[in-house]
Length: 286
Image (cartoon, rainbow, N blue to C red; front, side, top):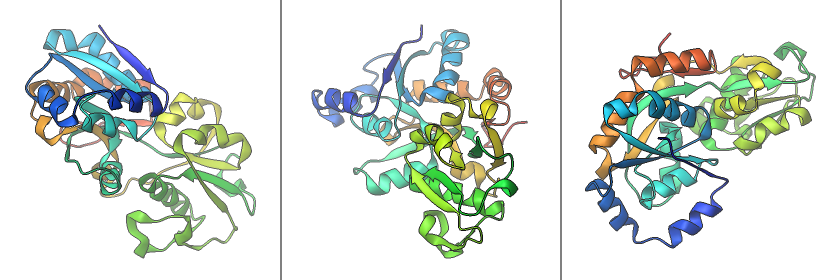
């Protein structure tokens, strides 16, 4: 049976964590098998839907009991993992995890396995192609470093801007060296981007938020992000656990189920083109 707890923002969970015991004690209890239920924190879409599919179709037969905690922001799931409130989370790619660890608390997390890629797309309600963007057009982009760089790569691939190559993965709007149409690039919180569509000329939106807002169906998709050589390595969303819990039998079993053929087919059929399934070998499935 699926147990879902939806958390709006970080505040509610932060209060709960403050009332709990020492993080190291909680993590230790989980690693020692303090309970058979595997508590996994996820973004609602598509992560929560994918785990719900597993819970409803595969988990019981495999002997896995899941507790799915839906969390609406990008910072809480790792904090909850470190504090022992979760056994694993599934919402982030390696680039985000590495950035978070560099700027967050001292912790050791293991990226257990790739699962899917959420393609960033350039969406608009007012124009049908990048050629129609007017001079001085405002384009909203995600403000977190990992996804901001991805957003700029879309604009660059479309010939709209040039980004200083020396900026690398840390490129921001300040690293734009050529902007022939004087585009205004506006970083916003990723979750706010779908709501910004009506107020800007176009917006680069993360796949999960685009799906939640029905953007692929209701807005014009002007461009998809380019798939570079390290596309899967950098941007596949995956299952993450504390280092000490990464070999937990329940975590490993979930990793196996996430690559079941039925799950891969479910992802392909449900989110055609927006979410790309990644198999156990780290290859995007067709």
